[in-house]
Image 1 (cartoon, rainbow, N blue to C red):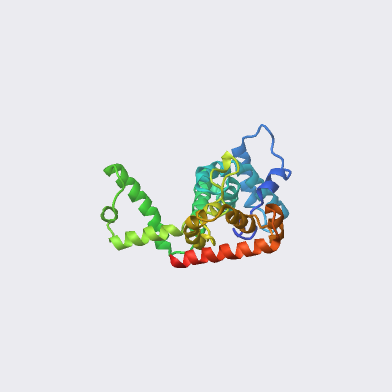
Image 2: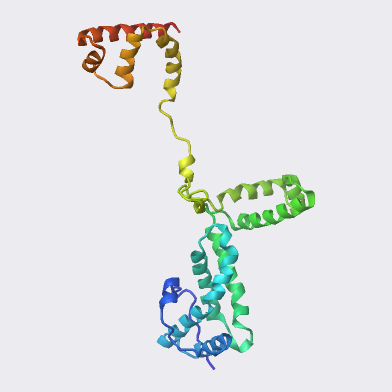
Length: 283
């Protein structure tokens, strides 16, 4: 019997929504064992020409039938910051690889064969795409080893281990440990638009908590220097300053408010400003 194999990447994995809504291309009796149906479909798959429409239908049916397995395995990684649907999509790629590589004649249960392939695909996703900055593979693997070493030593010592202790446990130099720790900063960065505790309502995003340039900071010294000088002013002069510079009133509006001519307001304002400038220059 000649076996045809479809290249793994020749057909993109079907989208989850398509899989959920598409009708089952080949009917399976409701009382039939799903594992038996899968074995039958896999046996039929290897006998079909790789370009046939029926092979594509069988392949899709196998994906749909085993999608719960992919979702179950994807949930193991759901606490790593990736949406479950995205992880399921990645796992589906592993499922397709398992379908294309599976040899029914070996007598192994398909789910047993497919599980490590699906899990491996998800782990590869985190390893290769979780890095915001590309780092050498040895440093990616070093990060995993550092995590194991740190966890083991923390349990043994009852505290966080030092770099020297980690290096001794891993039998590498301290420089290698430091390089691995530094490269870990390139892993799993968070978007500035991501919200803190989104489940508790409308939380602040990280960008909302970042400091910004305060263009008024340079005026703080002037305000503090002006405070005692303003306290020494005549109440009327102080009122004119407040109306002019804090309320944005024109000289005509100030004159109407206080009950004097606009010309008089102009003279008082000029005199008060000159007095304040003189006081500041003396400091």
